[in-house]
Amino acid sequence: MLIAGEPIRTANRALRSAADYVAQVAPTRFAVLIEGETGTGKEVWARAIHEQSRRAGPFIAINCSAIPEPMFEAELFGARRGAYTGLDTDRAGLLRAADRGTLFLDEVADLPLPVQAKLLRVLEDGDVRPLGGTSSFTVDVRIISATNTSLEPRVQQGHFRHDLFFRLSTAAVKLPPLRERVDDIPGLVEEILTEIGDAWTEPTPRISPEAMLALARYSWPGNIRQLKHVVASAVLSARGELIRPAHLPTHIDGGAPQRTIEVPADMKFSDALARFEAGYFGQLLRDSGGNVSQVARASGLSRATVRAKARALGLLPERPGRAPRR
Image 1 (spheres, rainbow, N blue to C red):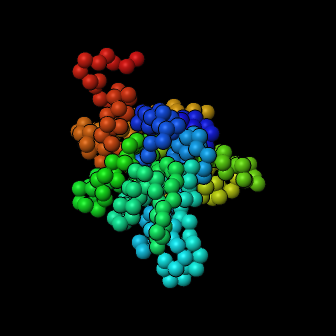
Image 2 (cartoon, rainbow, N blue to C red):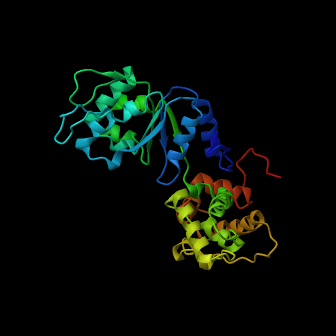
Image 3 (tube, helix red, strand yellow):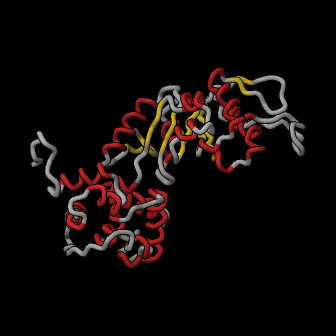
């Protein structure tokens, strides 16, 4: 799977699995549903799917939570002149604009129920009837949708059509949050610094191991989007100097229990991170009496991630029947 023309580089097993799956799905005509917290890059993935789909038409994105419900039908399906007050020309609508391409429905959980029924018809036979129109147009549109919450509870509550949910989720992808991708943070930070450097009039500042560790131990509720803003802010604050913890927002360095470690100036970040993680998880496990659930809550990571980290660091015994790692 390519993102912005580059292969995904990640140490996260769930993200690698998602990338492999999407690489298989991208060239097909199947609808794709992308689940992930706000800021995990759902639209970036949707664009990558379109770019590798070989569809000739455009990629058009719409945020379903930003459109007033009375305007939704006209926005998607178009409208004939006079269909509502003030419309003095025909309006094509985004589905026709995306013909032979991809329509990306962000925050699809907010799609109004009346619009859901009409969208289902488009998915079934490709027919689009504008608001106030008496005839239909046929379109060839691939739908990629995204949500930051699971659609299944909304289906059970009657707020989302089950038949539309099944059609939209023919291929389903779940993006893990950044707090479960701690090992990816150094690479992401370097990519962000490189992007900033391309538009920076001064040499792009480097980041100190201490500042990188502070970024690695923060829980990142805003995920990659928040990371980009924080790094850009740190670049401006450092003014060309080495980025240190003092250049980060105060809530970043205070976002997790403080752990002091000695970091030699020539130590590689991977070694510094391993040293930090050993002390960080070791202390949390001691404080909790070895309770993985408590450590997960304190660190903001999933229990599976905590177990994997702790076993890799030799802080928890291997599962029965497994040989110890060498």
